[in-house]
Length: 219
Image 1 (cartoon, rainbow, N blue to C red):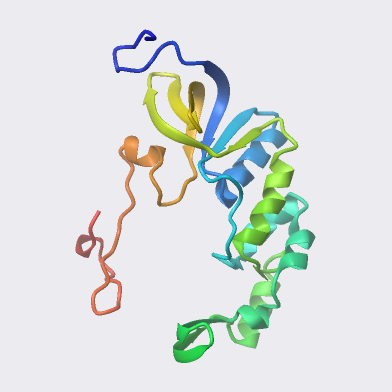
Image 2: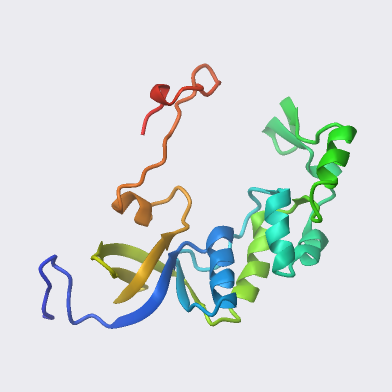
């Protein structure tokens, strides 16, 4: 048996040091890894899923996001993977994939509003789902010096005055990662935010409509 620290941590587990530990390999985590690398900051990104997203979700890429992707040199590649905006202009509630539409919500603003928005940014909006965007980001992030480890999840972490020691698991192997910073980019899933006492404020729908006041919500 290995020695255990005061918090029950196995002190014999392998350990590595890295300036920044990123938890979550979606667009936010991948972009952070890329930007840190561009500033010469080493990082380790851990993502519990075995690969990038494998199904379409969150397809609307707004102007600000596209401006960031433009700075990364990915805007044209994203537009090449994107749907025409006219095909992604509605959210539809249907009984099945083949029909039975209950309602639809138009997302495309009026033509004059589109013209106004286009004039505000050098970038163009896109309708491109995460399963198309994430591989582009992962390929760029893999150029380093930041590292990406898919199939690796955060188990726990302890934070001191100037260091964070995190336990991560890849398959049956566990190891400690000591970092100056740990960044939770794992969306609503369990991640460092909850352990650090940072919570999302949820709102319970009321008759299908979300309330406007925070006191009506639940945490």
